Length: 377
Image (tube, rainbow, N blue to C red; front, side):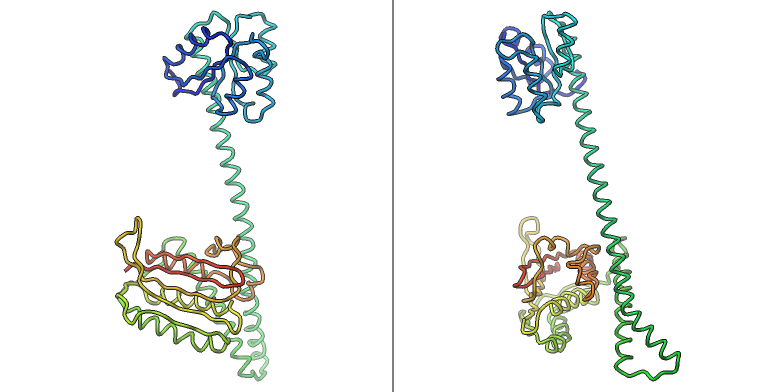
């Protein structure tokens, strides 16, 4: 046998013919089903489409030609190859068979080797056709994905230009004033310095993103105590939260196990998550930084993690956007480009991954968002 076993449906109103043909095919390990009418054949094919049908022409009520025509009108059956097996061997009979949609024609009495060869030929062609269809669909999907990436990168570039142009314009105005000998007010100078700092941050984020995409994000891991670290991060954000009219809450045990990691990189993780939480929480809301132990389950059974949680009562993230918040080429909402470029979360995810950790997000629009970071101990 030249092909692996196939699923074959035999259609003939003569049980003896079905038995002879089935034995020939089963000797080659083909999986064979038999029915005795065209109507039964259509029902069997709709329940489970075979790879090839061997069908007699002369059958009562619904002959082979009519059955083949009915298959051609059903989108789920039209591509199944039909081999007619009939005692009628005139040229007109064969022409009618092909006109009704048949792929091949074998005359009775038939040779076993001929039937097997024709079956294997049709099975091979159908399998090649299916493989080609799958390849074409894969190419179509890949092409659509490339187009989507192209659009996302174009939007990414546009947002990048926007985020660079705005602060650089402020810096440029100050430089022009200095060049002309004009006095610069301290507040204007402070704004220019802040704008320059935003440009530096954006460029650093771009560089970190490039490094992470190429596996070049260095981690200098050293042991350190989590509690003093968390206290220092909370102290840093207390003033910012107070100025924004937001209550910053903290909760963790008095002691936590030592953790090994790059503290400066983990600082960026918490600073980004807390900064976003405060940015998108309205005045009068609350942000909470919490920590604790978590034990792994399933494939992670026996492992221990330091769990960091950042919870806010902000506007939340729509469900259709939540799966893409760590994608550097997407922006949560178009208007957010003026409030931050959106590279931060992409970098946070990569920094956590570089520590063999995990990050997940949950959100409900109008109620808030929570981020959970798990770092292995």
